[in-house]
Length: 592
Image (tube, rainbow, N blue to C red; front, side, top):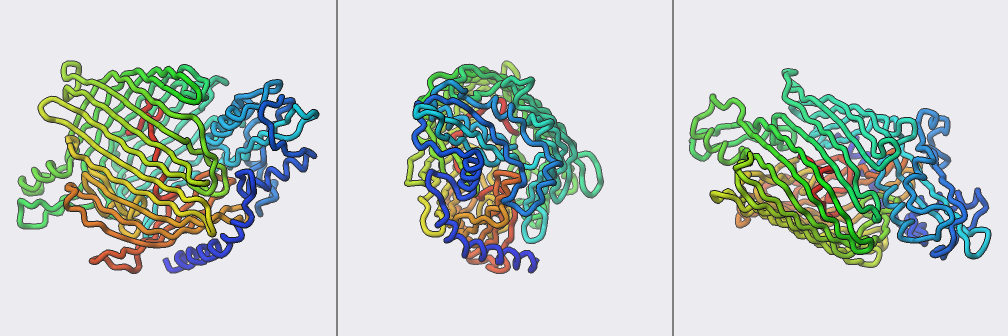
């Protein structure tokens, strides 16, 4: 542990000291230092000159420029690239929304770049206009850098040298350079592991139809006994461009397992108020979930988009206790009342409208490091309505609605985004469920060493028919405490983080962070007792392998009743509190 902390503070100090130089090396035109070096090199090699005003000029040539995973920017020998499949040029070319012989349209170029950045196989994506053979002509370089395709993807959540969760995903994510995926999957938590695999392709037979299938089984770590399985099947065509008018999709998902509420690496225990002794009932139960749906989408507009969804979905969730015969009947009854979610089944047609703007800001050093990031601007509104009836198989007769709204304000080269969401199921026999959520996310303009990012969240489950709870602590919020340390039907949390500009260290983009968290979760808002922590973090991006940052945080509780040292040391991936966004319910992206 001391060795890990020594390495952590050493890397933190190096990145902090170098951050000032990184700011000085930031380039004009919105490129990071890494991206600017790529642009300069590719233009120089072709003896081309950047075209500063390409809008409306004729595109006389388009060149797709795939960059190898490892090049002169990193210490890895170039021959290693022979073990990797680079995306075929035609695979990139088919994503272009423009062609030779047409006029340069900034909106189409920017949308193409956004679509390419959404592909997990690509890290750097740059579309660079260069001067053509005449003043009214332009050449385009479409520059992409693959991430390593034949690899062991992994996700680690570890605190204080204990593994909270581990996922190993050996995969070939670019079969024959086509972006087809073949993968295995191993997941591990303190009580169980899973084994399985998946197949997927987002452009089946060269079309815009995507398909995905995966299946996995759960095994108990101590006994080796089966604990269930999970998987999914998805098939359909999404709204792949702003000009796409129709989309459709179908999916089927299942998850059957034993749920355990962990605090750190230990299963939480429940003590019933009705008994004198401490009952020590493990907070765990059987969970059986199914979801299936079909949808059709009709989209209108381009700058101002209106997407209408029509479909039908069926969802079932059954929760059962494990064997509790050894516990007092009064304790069992209270455990079921307080900890077990309510089983429910619903079959619903639905209609949904999303209205949003389609202009974007291109920023760097927000969610990732050293790479372009795109964030929508202006309003984003969503309304979904769905009925259900006990006469056709639903547990309850109800009218459900989901409403979301956000607005993104520019703040120099940062932004401000508030978001509110309300989900209501007005049901028969007073079996209502209602949740209100609000978020505020502020990304300051870059200054000095980097940016300040602020994020606040409030969730009020004021009708909690399903008896579900939020968990807080460790990875998501309150990083100085154990994972899942606090739970409740309501949550209040806020975080402030200073994130330094990244610096290039042997092609890795390295940054540091200092943070402060406050929050709590409780079944009653009036019982909130806000906990606080502060700490330091390290962020690293390896553009050869991913667009997602590796994160290491060391937090210290600063609330009375909690030991400040040694605190909690946590490693994971992605920033601690991601950018909030309106997320339209979609059959092709549904989760359990």
